[in-house]
Image 1 (cartoon, rainbow, N blue to C red):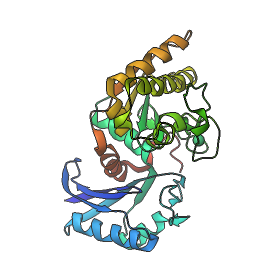
Image 2 (cartoon, protein in one colour; image 1 turned 90 degrees about the vertical axis):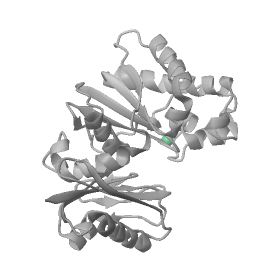
Image 3 (cartoon, helix red, strand yellow; image 1 turned 90 degrees about the horizontal axis):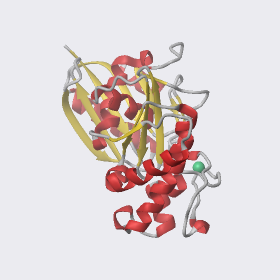
Image 4 (cartoon, rainbow, N blue to C red; image 1 turned 120 degrees about the vertical axis):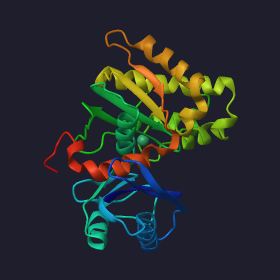
Length: 289
Ligand SMILES: [Zn+2]
């Protein structure tokens, strides 16, 4: 009997697990992300061997921050500063002699949410709202890729903000949705963590999120939007209710989707990673890659 391995490679922690062929979790380990790239790769090797416990590995999948090139598996995660143009697929396939698949963490989380959540909707959007913000859009359960990964968080919005001079996006663009609603954006504008926001401040974050959702829904018209990540969970109903009210008030022609909070919290990326280890390119609209 063989196993699949999932890697959640984050800027602050690495999580690695093994699952059975049916997707049942067997063993999971977690470590702080080392600063250096070589230390990071060596730590991943060790963690993979630890969770494999000598079983035959059938495939490895990974979720990591963008940007990356999925087909070649070359990654340059924005929040891991020493990782630039790392040929992760070539490195892993050489070390373990098994197929390796990698994708942007938001796409991987979208797949896990869809499969584990038992969703069947044709147009499914997953949004993660944590330190940063990102999205994964699925059509019939397959990832919509675009020429490069679509970045819904970096759309320009008609914002409302008490301190507009403090808003700044790490991408370098101006008036990005992310700069008003992400964990880093909230810290910059309100000069405190999201859990300390007042009711009025949550209202403002909800307003700005709603403006972004209005744009997203006008263009993509998804059936449902599922929200994961610490800010979504922390903001909960007060955030989503305000965002929904703003979104709906602006949508005159397009049917508003249902907004739902993720049931899986922080585990979506790792389960998605072991799922892409098994399914590989079958999960994509463009299978030729
Ligand atoms: Zn931006």
